[in-house]
Image (cartoon, rainbow, N blue to C red; front, side):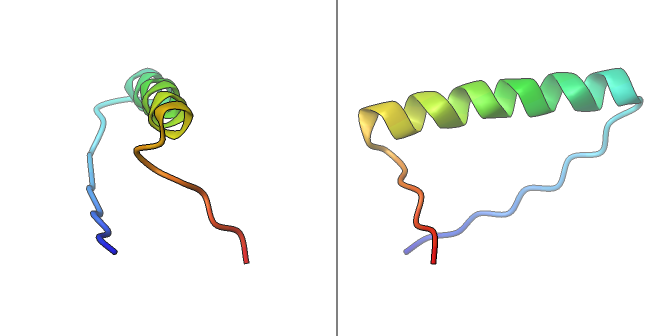
Length: 41
């Protein structure tokens, strides 16, 4: 298993919210096609 942690500093709250939304869209697409899976224990 591989885990990548990325830290991004945003200049303001608007940029932070935009990045969170983009990340959610990318994550949902990757889950849909099977590139990543969620495992809840």
